[in-house]
Image (cartoon, rainbow, N blue to C red; front, side):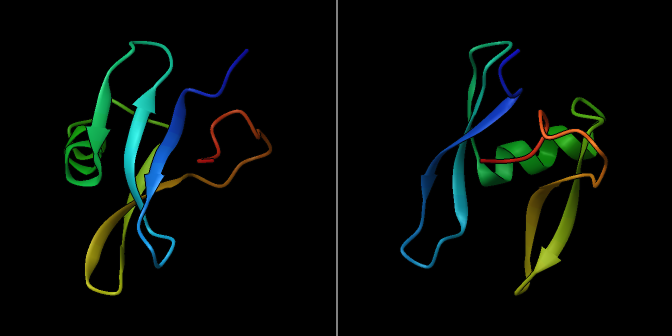
Length: 69
């Protein structure tokens, strides 16, 4: 089974900035993905403040299928 979320673009500093949902086919910016996580659409992901920006992260568990990559 493919990963649910795939990072499709990174900034020059390595920050993930664009994402693709392999299950629905939708593309999202970092801020759109953050909003969807906060609205409960992606329960295996959470939002952390990193260098002052809300940043999507996968919740730590024993599954690699939900890791961002």
